[in-house]
Image (tube, rainbow, N blue to C red):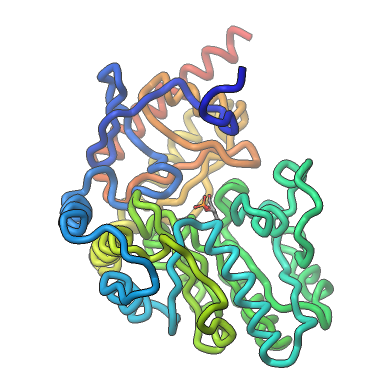
Length: 395
Ligand SMILES: Cc1ncc(COP(=O)(O)O)c(C=O)c1O
């Protein structure tokens, strides 16, 4: 009999009932170190006092009104995002997938209104992930996500990760945009080198295309900059944001330049919940913490420490791990053993990591991770690796 919850996830037999900082408490009382942060969502950890206050204060005042009316919290968050980024304007969504949908619509409408309605195609990359909607799976294009769900939404052209010549060759009179994650998350923590991001910006400029960056996973301070593209010194025309911006409250956004957004006039897009008072009150509180030089320097400092220790872990367990990769606190351990076995061994040793493609485990801890937490992470990951070594020895 089908379970009452549609069984689209292989769930671990864990039930968390409470969270504090980088720690989760299981129903049986065990405490787990959370190096997954709900897949890069809980940027400020669990139950951060500033977020709890923002949410409860707003909950006592007003939950929801609709975008038919002015929403001061939404205005405040949009103003803050415009102040801190390349963007001139922001639309709020509830998830990364919805941000992807709008980004594609926005790019197409921009060209349509400029008298180039044939420009509808978006060039995307193998191994990418942009969500599970019809546009999202068509954008990523991998068979794993698309099989059985045809006909696929047309208008996406896929190029091998890192293949700049392939990008140039894929451009035609139908191309509207290039969409890329500055650091692939689901694809196995694969950073796009700065030089490549710069080259993509140049290709877009030379060909009159829009550059869409998907910073759903790598944005909001995770790499040590507010947004990952800042490392390359470029700016996109459109950017997808979600996950960390709500710190655990469902919130996403599309940020855009005035030109890129020029087609999105009244009636062209909407969302019942997008930008509602609760989400935006929390979003403001998250951004106020994350978008400060001291916070971002702290992310980079802790990331340096964690990475150095992970290099040691890989050196100590060459049969389990192959390499450390990633940027800031978006780190991946490429495994030699099965990554799923390593994640499960982590559960046995009360540390949470997240599997990704390319046999990688992801470490996406809350950005408020402390040095003590890092020390605990290493003890637990080392135990997990020893457990895998014992299993390999027995096999
Ligand atoms: C890069 C990227 N884009 C889009 C999405 C989809 O976001 P959501 O699950 O919030 O719809 C994700 C989710 O993992 C992601 O990592």
